[in-house]
Length: 159
Image 1: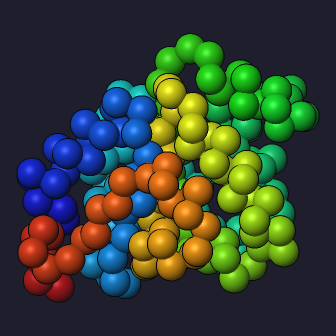
Image 2 (image 1 turned 90 degrees about the vertical axis):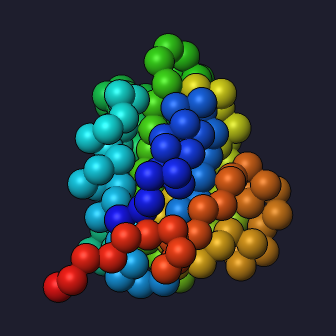
């Protein structure tokens, strides 16, 4: 579980429309923190997507608009327009590092996600096992704050 100081920082960033890449080694509590605490503590309209198998990355950009009740939208630019209006929203993509391994159109996918990341009232929270700089897409990585979960900023509970 993320410590209070970092946890409140994370909530503040997301409420302000910032994007965050939450990363750290496996089994340190990234998904637990987000699903069991953060999404319950936030008032933003939120959607949680997990890229872990068997989720089909090919359907990611169909699922995003449906997650925000935009079933009727087909064109990505219209989806971006719709998501830029109204209240703040949060999209969580868990196991983001998996996108790199399963996507045939990784750079195009990053460009689409970058369009979301650049919206003022839309926060993107990526959960991965590595920092975004490892993907070597600087323009995309520059849209995000990094928060590493490690032994110094998490509470661990005995199993």
